[in-house]
Image (cartoon, rainbow, N blue to C red; front, side):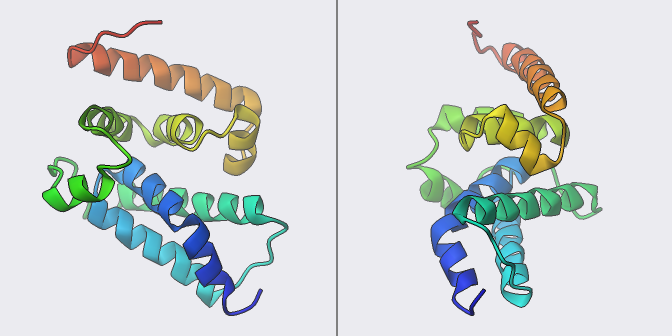
Length: 164
């Protein structure tokens, strides 16, 4: 990989990594930090990727791992409101209702939130998610089903009408 590869990766997948980190942390500043760490890591230790999809998978896996580490850290604060900058930045990508649902997804246990995010927001199929997360396809399918049930329960508590 040449010196421009990290820049290429950032230009091509920077928004995707940022959205992933934001969906999992619920904090735009934390998502920015994680995104920066992912691309600095790639720049510091260049990787050989077979394709752009391989690069994207590596970047998302790296972001997800950093989000997991953040959740384990003592400095994480869960109940921070969305600030105006966040709403302006993501207004073209998420509606206010989407933001509420995304926050509910972020509050789910990580094993469910990461699968739901990858499936619905990044449009990966179960096979691709299993490969990306290093899990069995049946495990991913079960996590997706359980996550949907937990999310449905949370949505119903908040007054959303959930249609199947």
